[in-house]
Amino acid sequence: MKKLLLIPFVVCTCQLIAQVKPGTTTVKKLKITILSTMLAQKGVGEWGFAALIEADSVKILFDAGGREKTVLENSKDLKIDLSDVPELILSHGHGDHTAGWIPLRTAMKASNPKALSVTHACKGLFDTRISSSGQEFSSRKTDSLQYIQTGGVVQMYERFTEIHPGIFLTGQVPRKYPEKNYGLGGNVIRKKDELGNIVEDIVPEDMSLVIRTEKGLVLISGCGHSGMINTITHIQDYLQQPLLAAIGGFHLLENNDEQIKWTANELKKTCMRYFMGAHCTGIEPVYQIREWNNLKRGECIVGSVGAVFELDKGFIAGALTK
View 1 (cartoon, rainbow, N blue to C red):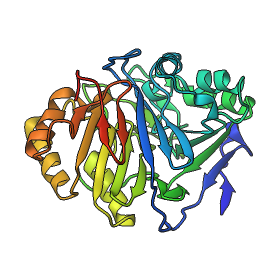
View 2: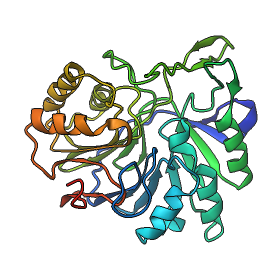
View 3: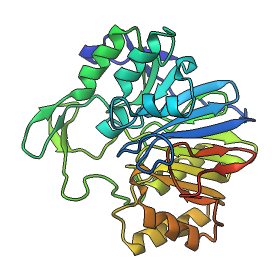
View 4: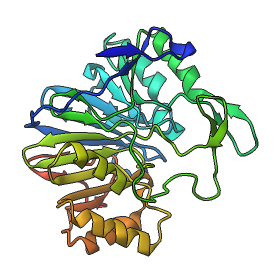
């Protein structure tokens, strides 16, 4: 089932997980709490993303925030104990999702050696990037060495995989539709491919989490660089079930009205009932999706630190965003 990913900086400690055929289990109890995004009615806001996933007996931290201490501080403010969370998912390699990775592991390990001791990531996250000035940077490789030295294990994915009963990672998402949600604002990043060639960085490691419930699928996204509709299409190729909720960053902030209208029309086909646009989604796109999908206030909201989604209750958010 498992085989080693042969990359020199993590030899024998980084596992490439093979595709697993999805089972039929559904999650009965689900709670998602936002720990990092720009808006905050409690805690600290930042340009970043992180969320705590509690699905039945499984606890997973999804992304680690954009500053080293944000998730630590916000979890304390929200009276959330991360020392009993054994796993972390990195949606992709950008710093606004990974800055807290090592500080969180170090802080939690002091209380519980198993805390955040397993990190799930997608193939491509550790690739060498090249800035617009031509400078090479391999920050995630350096982070991975530090993480492994703490006793952590990195598990790598390429394909759609069930990591716990009813809980799935998308792996790399095929780009069926031309949703180019990367390299925006003139910020073109390049990378080295497996052969050492310099190519455009399309963020191939962009990976989302999906949870299967009896009410429908719940999607959690870090930035959605693969494209929101591409991601949902990929998920539904494996899990033929309506989309109940989409939560997280979806990188719509630079999309024009026509592009967002197209996204909204495609979302109608999924039967989506709840939408939380956090981080890079943008504020106006959230309200456009609310209007064009005929969602009610409280069903389509801007994400904020401390906001919660519960399977039986929907969104629980402060007055600023609900």
